[in-house]
Length: 88
Image (cartoon, rainbow, N blue to C red; front, top):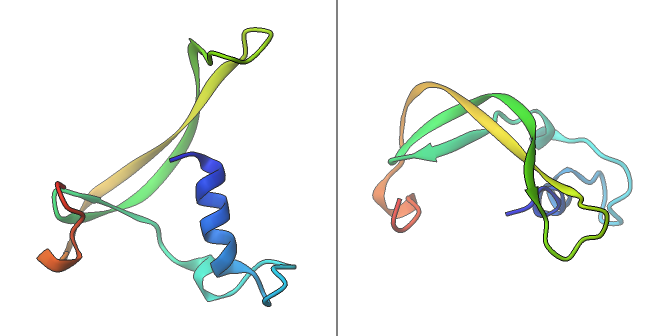
């Protein structure tokens, strides 16, 4: 997944109206969690790292970047089996 994929996905939820102009609504204040072994962990910190490996196919030796989301303590929220990602 790329950051642009996340932006496009969230844009459909945060647009004020169907024309997608303007931003902001109730989901804008939603807490972000990530599933780890069937448990939810809240994202507490995000960092952007520069990756020293060159992206092949790009000119001028551009370097890739990665968005690292760091979690907090394990949440007491346990996902039901039917909501878990297969293979997680």
